[in-house]
Image (cartoon, rainbow over all chains, first blue to last red; front, side, top):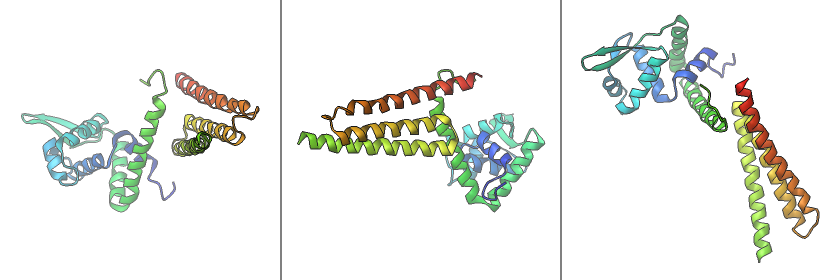
Length: 134
Length: 90
């Protein structure tokens, strides 16, 4: 591993579950709250003023939950989300991600942008495919 | 006047093709997708075609052959699209 690159597991995690820096902030917040559950409104309020709107937070929470990083608890006032990785490998990748967030924030944010960029280019390539991947 | 405008536009189009090719080369290096490499090469063939046409001028009888480069460029793009589709089915 090049010291100018993040670990492959962390890169895979970013590729699958972290489409933007805001999504990264959401995940870091939930991980550092140590299993506590949050409503989308609470997450948006806690991230203010950097990430703000709850409409923006909601899809990230849904994505992270569908990728098995968050657990959804339904309460009377709606769905709440708490950090609960489904596999030990996932937990390890997140641990490394949090470490990178504290120790190499510039590299991490650059990587998030670079991967998001690559996904946009991939969308261009996919536009030429007659049948889309399932 | 008209021929000056044609020459000017010929140069502008050549440069635009070269720049487009350079962008696709960068996308190829970023993603490793063969489609981008083919696009880069195709745009440079179009640039070469335009440059030759502009340099020889419409009166030169060899000018027509330069358009073979344009055909090759489009065939390159077409084959890259077909390959991208076939690669996924395998």
